[in-house]
Length: 272
Image (cartoon, rainbow, N blue to C red; front, side):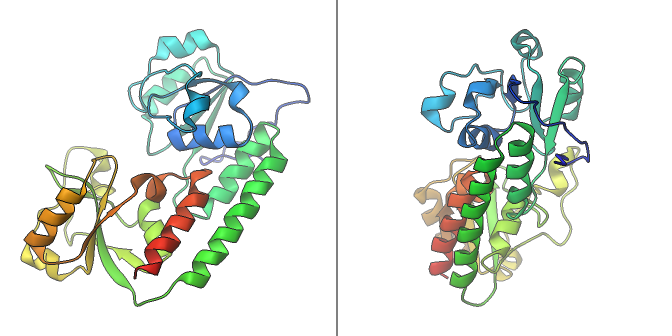
């Protein structure tokens, strides 16, 4: 079996009877590993790895996705580290790679990338049968979503932060999820340049009459900024366009939660 990760690195499957000690620095992947029946192999997770709650409660925290405790991870003596290109800092991953033998890099950028992710982790850690069951569930939900898709295309502005206002670019997982129901993510004509690398993928913007005229609706995510119905009401009055609160986990978490995410998209499409 070819177990090739997001940077083209091949990983050997565990030998029969071999156990792994896994540290996951990716919340959605931690949930996926548990869904694959691999929770007993997890020896470390971030504080943002909150699902499934009853299971992860017993797994030691090693910091956040970007501010990990390297020495604590060293003491856990992991054999495998799972990271994500967007969520984790490369210098940190490089430092961890000095003492962790196997670093698995993930980078789903579209919903159907989850199929490869299931098979990658299932193949490495001996959970192929469970991975294939997840693939079958995903395909059923994906087919149902395609059948339910209706209504004319819309341009939407998906907001992830306030003060400053921030959105997502079209090459993000969130934007690709929206495309599945015919909702095209708005992008600024000239994205604001900032000193941080994420600016291109998560640009800042300011509200204007011109911006409002170019969109059909606004989506306010429940994470990472915790938008509420009060924000929805205030923004609707400000811009005169429909504003909707959406579940950020359902829109941005890949892995096993993506299956529920497809059902959630179907409910959004039903309101088109």
